[in-house]
Amino acid sequence: MTATDAPSSGPAWVQILLSVVGVLGGTAGVFATVAVAVRRRRFEADPAELLTSTALTIVGPLRGRVSELELETARARGRALAAEREISELRVTHRDLTTLLHRWRTAIMAPDATMATVRAQIRANRSLCPDEQRSPSTCDG
Image (cartoon, rainbow, N blue to C red; front, side, top):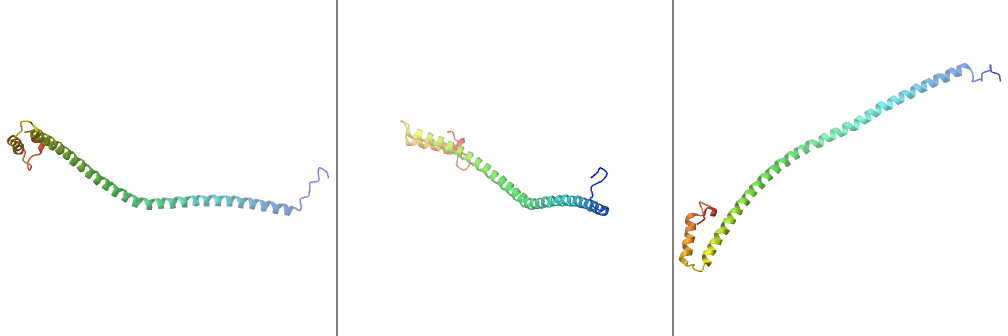
């Protein structure tokens, strides 16, 4: 072969046909790539929409339940505070009654105690503090 002789690749119409097929194949590949990219975005959007709608479906009842629980918690706190106040009042009453009992016991156990002195002290405490009107804490007689 000489430098002027080009290798024979067949007739010219075959070369044109191969070029057209190559260009069409390349174009089809580009279109296929674009189609896959568009579908992929749509496929990514579909799960996002599904997750969003599912989350909204779940969140609605949860919000209602959370508000119910908040109301229940507020009521329970109110009851706990009331119980705490009552316990505090009962402690004060217990302390006062224990002090009164100690005073009476001391009066009863005193070496010079007589029935008259003990009764007089009890009457003094009762007259200072009727059960219906005052608590024993005001009775210091």
